[in-house]
Length: 299
Image (tube, rainbow, N blue to C red; front, side):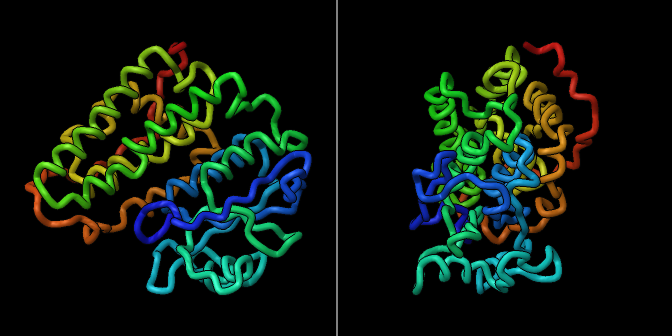
Protein backbone atom coordinates (compact mmCIF):
# COMPACT_ATOMS: atom_id res chain seq x y z
CA UNK A 1 0.00 0.00 0.00
CA UNK A 2 1.31 3.44 -0.87
CA UNK A 3 0.39 6.85 0.45
CA UNK A 4 -2.33 7.14 -2.19
CA UNK A 5 -3.87 3.79 -1.17
CA UNK A 6 -3.12 2.26 -4.55
CA UNK A 7 -0.70 -0.20 -6.00
CA UNK A 8 2.71 1.16 -6.93
CA UNK A 9 2.77 2.58 -10.48
CA UNK A 10 6.14 0.97 -11.11
CA UNK A 11 5.81 -2.52 -9.61
CA UNK A 12 8.70 -4.90 -9.27
CA UNK A 13 7.51 -8.03 -11.01
CA UNK A 14 9.94 -10.84 -10.19
CA UNK A 15 8.45 -14.26 -9.53
CA UNK A 16 9.50 -17.07 -7.21
CA UNK A 17 9.30 -20.48 -8.88
CA UNK A 18 9.68 -23.99 -7.53
CA UNK A 19 12.13 -24.96 -10.29
CA UNK A 20 14.08 -21.71 -10.17
CA UNK A 21 13.42 -20.92 -13.83
CA UNK A 22 12.57 -17.33 -12.91
CA UNK A 23 15.95 -16.76 -11.30
CA UNK A 24 14.33 -16.79 -7.87
CA UNK A 25 14.04 -20.41 -6.72
CA UNK A 26 11.80 -21.32 -3.81
CA UNK A 27 14.13 -22.08 -0.91
CA UNK A 28 13.63 -22.08 2.87
CA UNK A 29 15.15 -19.11 4.66
CA UNK A 30 15.89 -17.17 1.50
CA UNK A 31 12.98 -14.72 1.37
CA UNK A 32 11.65 -12.06 3.72
CA UNK A 33 8.39 -10.11 3.61
CA UNK A 34 8.26 -6.44 4.51
CA UNK A 35 4.69 -5.66 5.60
CA UNK A 36 2.50 -3.08 7.38
CA UNK A 37 -0.17 -4.08 9.88
CA UNK A 38 -2.58 -1.48 8.52
CA UNK A 39 -2.34 -2.51 4.87
CA UNK A 40 -4.92 -5.05 3.60
CA UNK A 41 -2.80 -5.92 0.59
CA UNK A 42 0.15 -6.74 2.85
CA UNK A 43 -2.07 -8.69 5.23
CA UNK A 44 -3.06 -11.03 2.42
CA UNK A 45 0.53 -12.20 2.02
CA UNK A 46 0.85 -12.84 5.76
CA UNK A 47 -2.40 -14.83 5.73
CA UNK A 48 -1.24 -17.01 2.84
CA UNK A 49 2.10 -17.59 4.56
CA UNK A 50 0.22 -18.80 7.63
CA UNK A 51 -2.32 -20.93 5.76
CA UNK A 52 0.42 -22.71 3.80
CA UNK A 53 2.49 -23.35 6.93
CA UNK A 54 5.45 -21.29 5.74
CA UNK A 55 6.27 -19.46 8.97
CA UNK A 56 9.64 -21.21 9.21
CA UNK A 57 10.28 -20.92 5.48
CA UNK A 58 9.60 -17.25 4.72
CA UNK A 59 10.30 -14.64 7.41
CA UNK A 60 8.50 -11.34 7.83
CA UNK A 61 8.69 -8.04 9.67
CA UNK A 62 6.62 -4.88 9.89
CA UNK A 63 7.22 -1.20 9.24
CA UNK A 64 5.80 1.41 11.59
CA UNK A 65 2.04 1.91 11.47
CA UNK A 66 2.07 5.52 10.27
CA UNK A 67 3.18 6.44 6.79
CA UNK A 68 5.21 9.60 7.33
CA UNK A 69 6.71 12.27 5.13
CA UNK A 70 9.65 9.97 4.45
CA UNK A 71 7.46 6.98 3.67
CA UNK A 72 7.45 3.68 5.50
CA UNK A 73 10.03 3.50 8.28
CA UNK A 74 11.29 0.99 10.83
CA UNK A 75 11.34 1.94 14.48
CA UNK A 76 10.57 1.16 18.08
CA UNK A 77 6.84 0.56 17.62
CA UNK A 78 7.04 -2.45 15.29
CA UNK A 79 10.73 -3.10 15.67
CA UNK A 80 13.83 -2.66 13.54
CA UNK A 81 14.47 -4.23 10.17
CA UNK A 82 15.86 -7.66 11.17
CA UNK A 83 17.38 -8.48 7.79
CA UNK A 84 19.25 -5.42 6.56
CA UNK A 85 19.07 -2.90 9.38
CA UNK A 86 17.37 -0.39 7.11
CA UNK A 87 15.72 2.60 8.77
CA UNK A 88 13.47 3.33 5.78
CA UNK A 89 11.81 0.86 3.43
CA UNK A 90 12.93 3.02 0.53
CA UNK A 91 16.45 1.73 1.16
CA UNK A 92 15.32 -1.74 0.11
CA UNK A 93 14.04 -0.32 -3.18
CA UNK A 94 17.23 1.69 -3.74
CA UNK A 95 19.33 -1.41 -3.05
CA UNK A 96 17.37 -3.16 -5.79
CA UNK A 97 17.19 -0.33 -8.32
CA UNK A 98 19.93 2.28 -7.76
CA UNK A 99 18.48 5.75 -8.03
CA UNK A 100 14.94 4.41 -7.60
CA UNK A 101 12.37 7.23 -7.73
CA UNK A 102 9.07 5.31 -7.80
CA UNK A 103 6.58 4.63 -5.08
CA UNK A 104 7.58 2.57 -2.04
CA UNK A 105 4.85 0.11 -1.12
CA UNK A 106 4.12 -2.96 0.93
CA UNK A 107 4.08 -5.90 0.66
CA UNK A 108 7.63 -6.17 -0.60
CA UNK A 109 9.45 -9.50 -0.95
CA UNK A 110 13.19 -9.39 -0.23
CA UNK A 111 15.71 -11.95 -1.49
CA UNK A 112 18.64 -12.50 0.85
CA UNK A 113 20.65 -14.26 -1.86
CA UNK A 114 20.65 -11.40 -4.38
CA UNK A 115 20.40 -8.59 -1.85
CA UNK A 116 17.37 -7.00 -3.47
CA UNK A 117 13.62 -7.08 -3.80
CA UNK A 118 11.93 -9.72 -5.90
CA UNK A 119 8.49 -8.14 -6.10
CA UNK A 120 6.08 -5.62 -4.63
CA UNK A 121 3.14 -6.98 -6.63
CA UNK A 122 0.75 -8.24 -3.95
CA UNK A 123 -1.20 -10.48 -6.35
CA UNK A 124 1.93 -12.27 -7.59
CA UNK A 125 3.40 -12.63 -4.12
CA UNK A 126 0.36 -14.40 -2.69
CA UNK A 127 0.09 -16.75 -5.67
CA UNK A 128 3.79 -17.64 -5.45
CA UNK A 129 3.63 -18.25 -1.70
CA UNK A 130 0.57 -20.41 -2.20
CA UNK A 131 1.86 -22.50 -5.10
CA UNK A 132 5.65 -22.55 -5.35
CA UNK A 133 6.71 -23.67 -1.86
CA UNK A 134 4.97 -27.05 -1.87
CA UNK A 135 8.11 -28.84 -0.70
CA UNK A 136 7.87 -26.98 2.62
CA UNK A 137 4.21 -26.00 2.76
CA UNK A 138 1.01 -27.83 3.65
CA UNK A 139 -0.03 -29.83 0.55
CA UNK A 140 -3.63 -29.97 1.76
CA UNK A 141 -3.96 -26.20 1.43
CA UNK A 142 -4.79 -25.42 -2.21
CA UNK A 143 -5.48 -21.72 -2.41
CA UNK A 144 -5.10 -21.43 -6.18
CA UNK A 145 -5.95 -24.84 -7.64
CA UNK A 146 -5.51 -25.08 -11.43
CA UNK A 147 -9.13 -26.13 -12.00
CA UNK A 148 -10.42 -22.93 -10.35
CA UNK A 149 -7.85 -20.37 -11.45
CA UNK A 150 -9.93 -18.74 -14.17
CA UNK A 151 -12.89 -18.37 -11.82
CA UNK A 152 -10.72 -17.14 -8.96
CA UNK A 153 -9.09 -14.55 -11.22
CA UNK A 154 -12.51 -13.35 -12.40
CA UNK A 155 -13.88 -13.03 -8.87
CA UNK A 156 -10.71 -11.35 -7.59
CA UNK A 157 -10.94 -8.77 -10.37
CA UNK A 158 -14.53 -8.05 -9.29
CA UNK A 159 -13.55 -7.78 -5.62
CA UNK A 160 -10.67 -5.47 -6.46
CA UNK A 161 -12.88 -3.15 -8.51
CA UNK A 162 -15.85 -3.08 -6.16
CA UNK A 163 -14.70 -3.80 -2.60
CA UNK A 164 -10.93 -3.86 -2.06
CA UNK A 165 -10.03 -0.21 -1.72
CA UNK A 166 -13.43 0.93 -2.96
CA UNK A 167 -14.23 2.49 0.42
CA UNK A 168 -11.31 4.84 -0.04
CA UNK A 169 -12.64 5.74 -3.46
CA UNK A 170 -16.01 6.58 -1.88
CA UNK A 171 -14.25 8.80 0.66
CA UNK A 172 -12.45 10.69 -2.09
CA UNK A 173 -15.50 11.51 -4.21
CA UNK A 174 -16.17 15.22 -4.61
CA UNK A 175 -19.69 15.38 -6.09
CA UNK A 176 -23.01 13.97 -4.92
CA UNK A 177 -23.40 11.88 -8.06
CA UNK A 178 -19.92 10.36 -7.71
CA UNK A 179 -20.54 9.59 -4.05
CA UNK A 180 -23.90 7.90 -4.60
CA UNK A 181 -22.56 5.88 -7.53
CA UNK A 182 -19.42 4.79 -5.68
CA UNK A 183 -21.14 3.76 -2.47
CA UNK A 184 -23.89 2.03 -4.43
CA UNK A 185 -21.25 -0.11 -6.13
CA UNK A 186 -19.80 -1.18 -2.78
CA UNK A 187 -23.21 -1.99 -1.31
CA UNK A 188 -24.16 -4.01 -4.39
CA UNK A 189 -20.92 -6.01 -4.07
CA UNK A 190 -21.59 -6.70 -0.39
CA UNK A 191 -25.12 -7.86 -1.22
CA UNK A 192 -23.76 -10.13 -3.97
CA UNK A 193 -21.23 -11.74 -1.61
CA UNK A 194 -23.93 -12.06 1.06
CA UNK A 195 -26.09 -14.02 -1.39
CA UNK A 196 -23.18 -16.18 -2.56
CA UNK A 197 -22.26 -17.14 0.99
CA UNK A 198 -25.79 -18.29 1.76
CA UNK A 199 -24.97 -21.56 -0.03
CA UNK A 200 -21.15 -21.61 0.17
CA UNK A 201 -19.17 -21.79 3.40
CA UNK A 202 -16.35 -20.04 1.54
CA UNK A 203 -16.41 -18.25 -1.78
CA UNK A 204 -15.66 -21.41 -3.74
CA UNK A 205 -17.32 -24.02 -1.58
CA UNK A 206 -15.89 -25.86 1.39
CA UNK A 207 -12.23 -24.82 1.10
CA UNK A 208 -10.45 -21.50 1.47
CA UNK A 209 -9.01 -20.03 -1.73
CA UNK A 210 -7.18 -16.90 -2.89
CA UNK A 211 -10.53 -15.16 -3.22
CA UNK A 212 -11.28 -15.55 0.48
CA UNK A 213 -7.88 -14.09 1.24
CA UNK A 214 -8.71 -11.13 -1.04
CA UNK A 215 -12.11 -10.46 0.53
CA UNK A 216 -11.44 -10.99 4.21
CA UNK A 217 -9.15 -8.00 5.02
CA UNK A 218 -11.81 -5.68 3.60
CA UNK A 219 -14.48 -7.21 5.83
CA UNK A 220 -12.18 -6.98 8.87
CA UNK A 221 -11.82 -3.23 8.29
CA UNK A 222 -15.40 -2.45 7.33
CA UNK A 223 -16.96 -1.48 10.67
CA UNK A 224 -13.98 0.35 12.17
CA UNK A 225 -12.38 1.96 9.12
CA UNK A 226 -13.85 1.64 5.65
CA UNK A 227 -17.50 2.37 6.39
CA UNK A 228 -16.94 5.26 8.84
CA UNK A 229 -14.36 6.74 6.47
CA UNK A 230 -16.30 6.42 3.22
CA UNK A 231 -19.77 6.86 4.77
CA UNK A 232 -20.95 3.98 2.61
CA UNK A 233 -23.83 2.14 4.23
CA UNK A 234 -26.24 2.46 7.14
CA UNK A 235 -25.71 -1.26 7.62
CA UNK A 236 -22.76 -2.60 9.59
CA UNK A 237 -21.10 -5.92 8.80
CA UNK A 238 -23.38 -7.53 11.37
CA UNK A 239 -26.39 -6.60 9.20
CA UNK A 240 -25.09 -9.00 6.54
CA UNK A 241 -25.58 -12.28 8.45
CA UNK A 242 -23.79 -14.55 6.00
CA UNK A 243 -20.85 -12.21 5.53
CA UNK A 244 -20.57 -11.63 9.28
CA UNK A 245 -20.62 -15.34 10.10
CA UNK A 246 -18.15 -16.03 7.29
CA UNK A 247 -15.83 -13.26 8.49
CA UNK A 248 -15.82 -14.69 12.03
CA UNK A 249 -15.29 -18.21 10.66
CA UNK A 250 -12.07 -17.02 9.06
CA UNK A 251 -10.97 -14.77 11.92
CA UNK A 252 -11.14 -17.64 14.39
CA UNK A 253 -8.39 -19.41 12.43
CA UNK A 254 -4.83 -18.44 13.46
CA UNK A 255 -3.58 -17.25 10.03
CA UNK A 256 -6.32 -14.60 10.00
CA UNK A 257 -6.42 -13.78 13.71
CA UNK A 258 -2.66 -13.58 14.16
CA UNK A 259 -2.21 -11.16 11.27
CA UNK A 260 -4.92 -8.74 12.47
CA UNK A 261 -4.44 -5.72 14.71
CA UNK A 262 -7.79 -3.96 15.10
CA UNK A 263 -6.07 -0.99 16.76
CA UNK A 264 -4.58 0.00 13.40
CA UNK A 265 -8.10 0.23 11.94
CA UNK A 266 -9.24 2.63 14.66
CA UNK A 267 -6.81 5.37 13.68
CA UNK A 268 -8.40 8.60 12.50
CA UNK A 269 -8.09 8.85 8.72
CA UNK A 270 -10.88 11.38 8.22
CA UNK A 271 -8.45 13.79 6.56
CA UNK A 272 -8.60 11.54 3.50
CA UNK A 273 -12.29 12.25 3.02
CA UNK A 274 -12.97 14.97 0.44
CA UNK A 275 -15.53 17.73 0.90
CA UNK A 276 -18.47 18.14 -1.45
CA UNK A 277 -21.09 15.42 -1.13
CA UNK A 278 -23.70 15.27 1.61
CA UNK A 279 -22.78 11.95 3.18
CA UNK A 280 -24.81 9.64 5.40
CA UNK A 281 -23.89 9.42 9.08
CA UNK A 282 -21.82 6.35 9.94
CA UNK A 283 -20.04 5.71 13.24
CA UNK A 284 -17.46 3.00 13.96
CA UNK A 285 -18.89 -0.26 15.28
CA UNK A 286 -17.05 -2.42 17.80
CA UNK A 287 -18.00 -6.03 17.00
CA UNK A 288 -17.41 -9.24 18.94
CA UNK A 289 -15.29 -11.38 16.64
CA UNK A 290 -15.24 -14.24 19.15
CA UNK A 291 -18.95 -15.02 18.80
CA UNK A 292 -19.64 -18.55 17.43
CA UNK A 293 -19.81 -18.26 13.65
CA UNK A 294 -22.32 -21.04 13.01
CA UNK A 295 -20.97 -21.74 9.52
CA UNK A 296 -20.31 -25.46 9.97
CA UNK A 297 -23.57 -26.49 8.28
CA UNK A 298 -23.11 -24.36 5.16
CA UNK A 299 -21.99 -26.49 2.22
